[in-house]
Length: 368
Image (tube, rainbow, N blue to C red; front, side):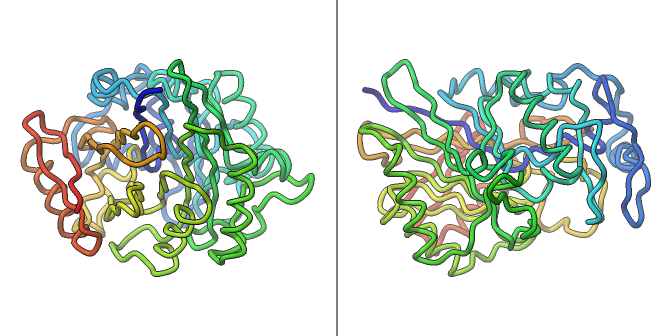
């Protein structure tokens, strides 16, 4: 067996304004308090960055990240897809409803995405009809889904990726109500929904551990992808930290892949295992929206953890920094990359981790 490399990202939000510049946009009508058309988000981005082309090729929004993916050659590419893929359904009365037209599924295929985590607070924005079309569209495209399903068993089921090396990646996905997921969205029995965590208690850890042990084999790398916490702020709650530690210590999880925050958060190495508390957004239509500039949510990272043979310990973590401009990912310049490195170093002090800027412009994690 040999070491393996994953690609992990935070939220990929290809709905709303992003959907409007793709070849097959949905009806732009929105049900928000202030913005009534998805084209309004395109206009905000154009005010900030200049004209944005329409009917762009599916590779457009990924921009420079495609070259980085090709260079890194990860064994499995995992994103948190925070949008419904549907042209039907009815909008949930929650104020913000993301959707991408199913005919735009090529935007995920263009990046070679292997798995979409769906246990989040937007996958049911267009109801169970929208969720069903999301699952069907991903399946037809050959992209695996995890964390939501047509019933409770499907929502809880992990994904298992067999690799040519003989190793496997086992991916579980969970959502938490503290990220804004309505408790009513939890899958129950034959009711569609997301794989919703009951809480962060030892009882929940015990159940997850039982599920992991039921599928784990020697040499596997187990990833727990969790949509948790609020959108803004660097604080990491004791509940999240204790839960992450327990997943590693008691539930045989090797990587905790946390997301929900719109910006990157601190990184911890716990007993040799990687904990990403908040990966930040990768793709969204927030360009030109004011109010949280200090968090630099226009900057993002793609995480490439390399896991050692046996035991699932982290060998290295390389992070590629990007800047969203005109709804397209551009490689971050030296100043922005240094800003991210400084941020991760400051936020990592509590964990004994830091980020170093490499000559190629990427970031590499250090830990003690």
